Length: 328
Image (cartoon, rainbow, N blue to C red; front, side):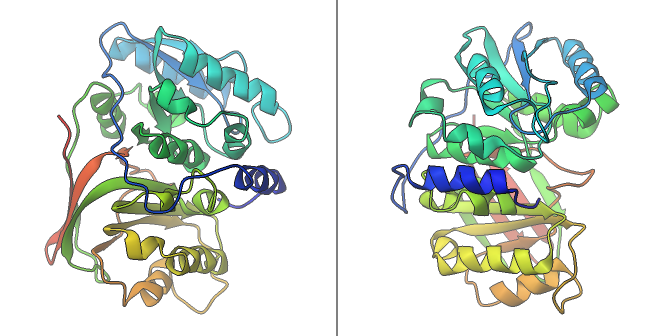
């Protein structure tokens, strides 16, 4: 994922704000399920998507029976960002505060979400609970929503939704979650898995982004009894090594109930390991919690939607891994 100087500045400011103590016990709630004819907003809180991808996603949502609306700045450009901080913040507030908008899908990831978190008052998302869907840099928003007791959806965004008109299996899973139906996932066994069963609150996302907001009020380490999932892209093994050790040294993994390791795509081999999985296994081999390797989440074609903040059971056996939601 990488770290920009802009995100570092934003995180430094956020870190100065009051934040929750580690070990916070929360019970996030699911926003209202969508009904036919409901409105979905598309915004770009980080980098700018392609206009064709946004239009194709809008058409797919119409086929699903919803009314898509675009933020004023969804296609704006300001350097690598989709508009200035003020423009992106304006779209985010419009989407969350407009009563007729029932869900929000992000245009793409990239960089910039941490900048917006610094401009929002504490408890903002708890006062405006809505489904938010996206991944990559959107992980910063997911962490804030979960810490404020609101579930959200770690999922792909406009380009994959629009590519096949919303008819592919992953887009249909996203639609099902928005409508209140939750999938169960079964994944094949991996040689590095730690067997066991754990029940807890599902949290996580992009490792580099989550590392950027560590020690802030949005840190996923604030959440007690977590089942953490992690993924990343374009990071060197050195950066991944430091980030995993930060979780370990900060006691986040000691407090976690379980760990789900997704895909670490295009990792740069700048340490003496054959793969990110080999390196992470070496770091965590003595970690005494259930750990799943190779889960289909991340910057890959099979990026299954995960409900952040949801109560789940993670079961890892010699035959494979099952992730099951406990939601009505």
